[in-house]
Length: 204
Image (tube, rainbow, N blue to C red):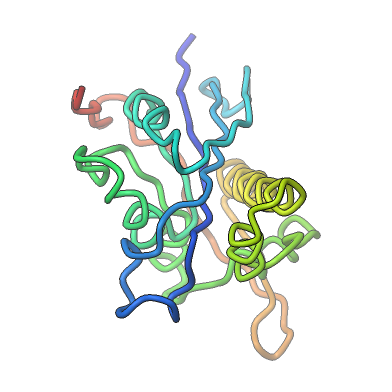
């Protein structure tokens, strides 16, 4: 049986853009990274999976997970999340097998759509908090705040996973435009033919 290992991830930062000198994600710092690591079959059915989070001082545990993934899935992850992570390792993270949902949406629809807007119409549910609060939770640093931060990051991963699965199996995503009109985006999240699949470069 042909299987694929997928990693869906999201992270939260220690700072906001207005706290750094330039709009450079690499200056924001990582507070937490949450990952859903799973195995799927050729029909995109999940065979096993786990949700795990890593705080800023344990990020070295992430790189082996990334290296062995057939696909690393995120939302605006190439331009933002990977840029935030890069200062924590000498490994060139862009060489991993990335799949950025927002990039696929832009290719199909020509515009950026917010994750929350897609979730509300595609999944009929929205995010449970906002990114600015995630930074505040980190700065407070007490156990209750850090628990809220972890929950927020993990929920973003689950929402990203469910949006990805919807697009993977149904080839569409949904949102409402600024006039509150329901819109549909046609997407192709399928894997290339096995003969076209690029092998992951060994970086360790």
